[in-house]
Image 1 (cartoon, rainbow, N blue to C red):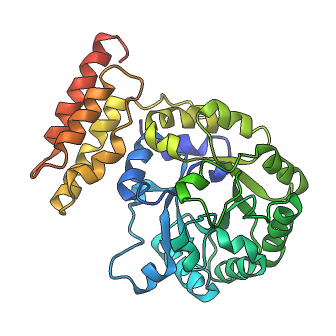
Image 2: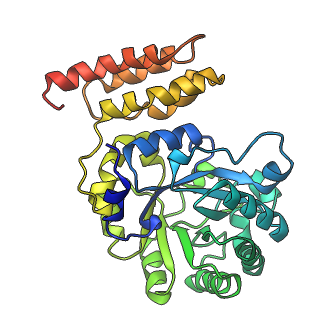
Amino acid sequence: MHQTRDTRDRLPAYSPQRFSIAPMLDWTDRHCRYFHRQLTRQTLLYTEMVTTGAIIHGKGDYLAFSAAEQPVALQLGGSDPAALAQCAHLAQQRGYTEVNLNVGCPSDRVQNGRFGACLMGDAQLVADCIKAMRDRVSIPVTVKTRIGIDEQDSYEFLCDFIQRVAEQGGCDTFIIHARKAWLSGLSPKENREIPPLDYPRVYQLKRDFPQLTLAINGGVKNLAEAREHLQHLDGVMMGREAYQNPGLLAQVDRELFGSTQAAPDPVAVVRAMYPYIERELSQGTYLGHVTRHMLGLFQGIPGARQWRRYLSENAHKAGAGVEVVEKALALVADKITSAGEI
């Protein structure tokens, strides 16, 4: 399952943005990323959005991650160029592959802090933020944005935003969520579902800005759809489908990055997590905090429901350890073996 460095070096020289997993609040934490890395070595992983205030003034370590998660990017929320530059510098010191500015989240809480999607209405400020970060770090600084906000949803508005941030901020990589955002009247969940997807608009953006690296996000359900998007764009970012059906990630390296290595076996992936789980338990982490990210691994495989149920019912019990995962695994592994699938 693990590739040597020599093997990785022989892979086609694709950008890390070719396939990535979206930053998702309360989902893509360090446990999730470590698990996803067992399934795909090449996919670019993102942290949850972390605000500059939390990093600079918070009591916890909001930049913690394992080197085994690499390549991993930090997504920042903020609108103060100096604070963003400081956080980008800290991220580079900690070893992150990339820093990404959130210009796409539409929640009220985010807007009150003047960051997220509302920043699309101030392209100059976004450009200033990107430039401030780029002046402090050598790692890539990227932007994740929408195609518009509220009534500012024309193609011209989008082009003007991209052009200003690229030319005055020096940003050369954008991840475009192919929906506009309503800053009031819709919840964040509704903003992910109600505004219609407009993939052709993002394709047109690549034709008009061929010098930029552009990745698309929004509604991507499988790797066949990802391959179709890659006919038009430089990269694809998958969100909830990658989280809820992580087994599909086992095929990413072969299908999208040209790896010749065998796809990871899901049973072996679970057992590869045991040393990590035991380390986390010894440091006070509850088993359920890790295993909640693993529930969807066997989607579509006999025994998947029993796997999910056993973990859901037992992982949060006091003293729960690796033996709980092994018992849950037996409920699905036996059925896979009897079906001749492994």
